[in-house]
Length: 268
Image (cartoon, rainbow, N blue to C red; front, side, top):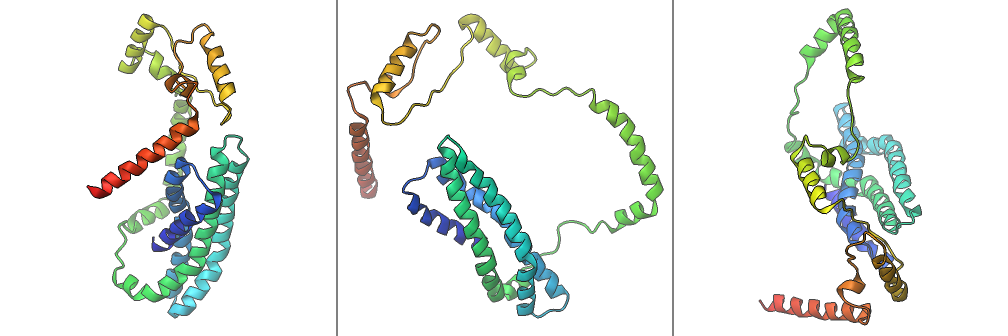
């Protein structure tokens, strides 16, 4: 956890090279890095424990563990890097933002696991040995003996279970999406939605993305949307703030407000 935590801190600090990142990337990047990179350290520590159980000295066990796990760790890391790199090709800009940050995060985690984790383990292995706990799972030796001694019975049992299961799975009905939940009378939510639609009609929200910084096109689009039959309301910067107030003035005002609020918080 210390190794991955250091890799996360380095990744968050080096995000400065991008200038700015989205709040989604900032919020989810660290959790994704922890979840994806944790396996790399488990591979290495598992090999280290196996080598020590075979009677190898601590340093030799770690050297062999790095050699044994570097292939699987790098191949797993390359697969993950390739998956996140695919986000870079998205036209929606949250994809490239998340992709570049996570590619860098996985590379940093690989370096941390292969370079920092062995050093930390070599220093703290006496403490690791003292705090090692027993396995929480039973050995299942009795179950394994029963399965091995009754092999023909187990095969016949699964063959018998396969036949009714095959016919049973053909009777299952699956619904994808929330249409059946909202439109059916079997749920309270569905009944409420039906009553609302009977009273006010069917409504749906549509989100339109426009190029940033082109106020003239936003004003023209806003006026055209108002002329479309069925459009009852539009939530936009133009309708909320107004056409005559530039965005830079509002942003500057928000910065001043944030500065005043920060000073007030410090004084309190």
